[in-house]
Length: 353
Image: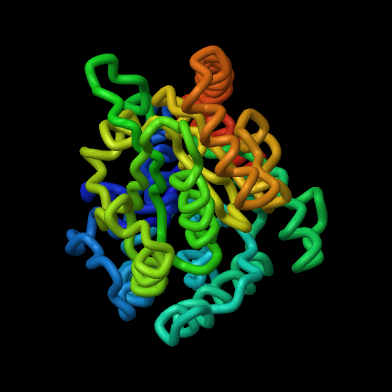
C-alpha cells in the first residue's frame, strides 16, 4: 500500500498546529512501518513564506497537481493533512482521506483572511464530498463536522493529535514569575480577555509579582498593544512576536502560568504542550475546546475569576503542584506512536487490507 501525504515541506520548523500535526503524523507513520510519499518535499519547494497570500494555492495545489498530470504522483491512498490540501482530490485516482481540524464559525477580521477563508471553504467542500474517510482530531471537531455539513458518522474516525517527546519539564530553567500566551493574535483567540484579567491581577494587594508575556503575531496586535496602554499596564506586558520552534519548549518552561483564552479551538495544542512542560494552564469556562483536551485545565468564568485563579496558583504551592501533576499525567496520553498506529489502521480500512 503506497501512501502519499499531502502537506507542505517538513524540513522547515512547524509554525502552527497544522504543520505540527503533519510533522508528528509522518514521524508516527514511519514508526508504524509506513514510509509515505511527500510530493511537496520531493519537489524541492522552498519553505512556505509566512503570511504569503499566494502560498496556499501554490504550495497546496500547483506542485502536486503538476506531478499528477505528469503521472509522477501515484499512490493507493492519499491523505490530505488539512482540507485546503484536499482541493486536488478530484484529480486523484485512489482512496482519499482528509484530516479536519476544526469548523471555524468566527467572521474573518481582515481582507487577507477573508480571501484565505474562501479558498479554505472550497477545499472543505471538496474534501468532505470526495473523502473515503474523514479523520477528526477531537470529538468536538467530529460533532462540528457532522452538524455543519451533515456527514454521516460511519465516514468519520476520531484520532487525537500527538505531542512530540521534546515537550517536557526542563529542571534548570528559572521561573521568573511570568504568565504567558503563545498563539495567533486574532479575535477568535480572545487575547483581550487575558489582558483585562491580568490588569485586574496586578491591582490586587499582596499577590506575587507576575509579568505578562504574549508570543505570536496577527491582525489584533495593534489593538492589544493599545489596550495595554489604556489599562496602564504596558510596562508589565511584553509582546515577543513569533517563537522559533527550537525555542518553544524553553519558552513554555519559563512560564509560571499559561493561559489559552480562546473562544474556540479544534484541538488546543498549546494546552498539552504547556502541561507537558509542567506549567498550570488556565482556560475560559464555556469555550469550545475539546473536553478530552481541556479536562485538567483551570477554567475561569470571567475576567475577575481568572485574576483570582492566577492569584491562587501563584500563592499556593500545594495547589500549584497538584495542578502540575494532573497536567503531566494528562499530556502523556497524546503520543506520536498512537497517532501513527491508528492512522495506519485507517488507511487499511479504506484500502481493504
